Picture (cartoon, rainbow, N blue to C red):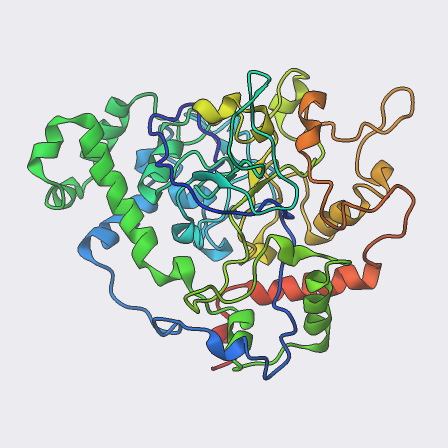
Length: 442
């Protein structure tokens, strides 16, 4: 489902954590050398056999039923799986920039539906000190926040593009209550739909009877069932892509894949590793291809989204419209969106928070042309000048990432990547798709 929500009744749990602010949103990152025999490869630890599955718990099985249940929507035709299709890594099954929803399925969402694979790995939303060489200055009501550290606070973690919730249970309720998505007008309407299910008696057995008298507690328990499905079923975090097998020295990359790996690993070329971390984690688990930090990239306005035809409307990421908490008042957060994992990115057909691009080639070309050939990226004004960063108000454009390659290149300079190099990167991105076991046994 499109991930925009009208309200946010549950505030995220905050924790302080040291993080970095430098990243690209939709390219890929890679290990340092990754030649066969690289010492990084043998350090990968998988706590289960990624080629087998185990039975789900009773609660998770019920959560699976609810995940695929269209009766939970106001239209009776839309389930969680409608926008989070399992054959598309639990992402959209089509190339729409944003999905259609509402009571009659004719209302358009505001943001592209994210993939749910690896969502359970996301840390809680936190505000903590940045390790970046370029400190962010936090402003509230045009006043700088006091701090003892010159490297001020930066956001990290959470779910949705703006990090407004920090658990799968909190995430599940949002689309159900969003008038642009599953369209329930009230909690009472949703509860009524749940109680009408022909398997409601099975649900009752899994919920404490005391919680039936409180709507919030009851819905929380039902959302917990959906969260259990996403937490238990290994398909949501399979770790069985070709790249995973490569790190375990069970397969080799092709020449094109190796070239692509080298390109986005190179800080003067793709520089994807700055954000989409590809090295084994500290506990030797496989990489997640995201640092979960937030960045403003200056993606062009997408007029496929009807709301964008209103010149006064801007999607400002952390600053709203999805969030409604204190962080929307911090101007340094405006225009920032969470860096997604790039696992299964090759299965997507709409990219960035606004679904502006529909192919990986166009995504990569945005990165390499944004500052060198902006006329190829942005529309022109009536006077013929390029309307650069046309989807972010001028007062927030200092939040845009100018410090990381390839955004450090100047107008007219050579592109960071040639056409053939772009193709090699795309080939490499394909190695992050789960399910490679169907092609090669480990």
